[in-house]
Image 1 (cartoon, rainbow, N blue to C red):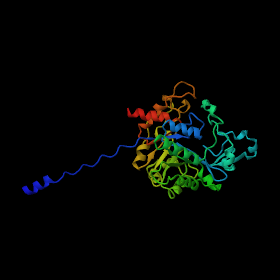
Image 2: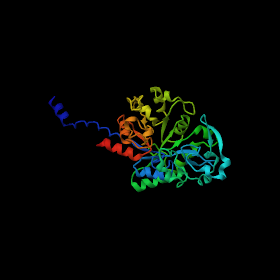
Image 3: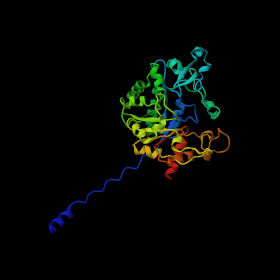
Image 4: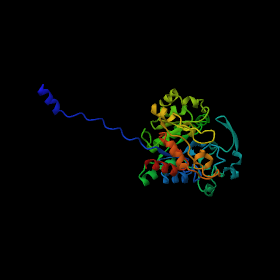
Length: 349
């Protein structure tokens, strides 16, 4: 017995399990670039967003007639370019139904890339962002390739990894028009060398079937956006928020991108109410949560964070973001990335 005890005493003690690594800080996604300070979806807006500290820049992607991907919030471009001032394109004005909405204007799929490059970008919200109109006419419509080049150059220059967070806009519509977005996007990412789960890329969509199609063709991270009502391909957004719905999303996506009110709703007075359980529920199925969109103007802020009565004046966006960080979100979309960076820094103090 004494020999056995001595033998056991000489054996090394078992090592305790290594503590889990600390959670990664939430990522800052520049919504259409630093769109609070520059006309959205321009190289200038993306570059400024990187300078403000964004981790990812977000191009919404639509297709041209000759199968090129360009960054525009919508394929109807009368509100974000000077196309209406080009008499050579007057005959291109059309009325179309896109995802159930009838729109009249000019559409990217009716232009070649060379034709679109003759247009100039302008501020989409001049009433709320009049200062941005000073930059009207200075920028062209960027291609996805140009956005990738910018991100890679900025990564080399800053020593930070700057990623892209593209959204496929109206994928069912473009597929029906013979301009499927998915193969064009996959080809561009492959050319950039971004094909793995750890590549600096998230692909987002409000539709479901195109994300499932992408999952079968790429390992980059996918985000299911969640809006109101139903998606263009018929998915019920409310059903996505149930335990079964979140589990289904986890089968093809890395995370979800819900509207802000899905995380913290607003009360009858326009202030923030009690947070929902969405973040906890999503984390329980292994999903990340990246809500959208934080904007600095009073018009968009909950009442407790507004400053003054002017809708265009900037309120306490840092405070608003900190309220959401407290729920455990994994990332956030902001029109003003520097405010998100400041909020994250304040949380560390």
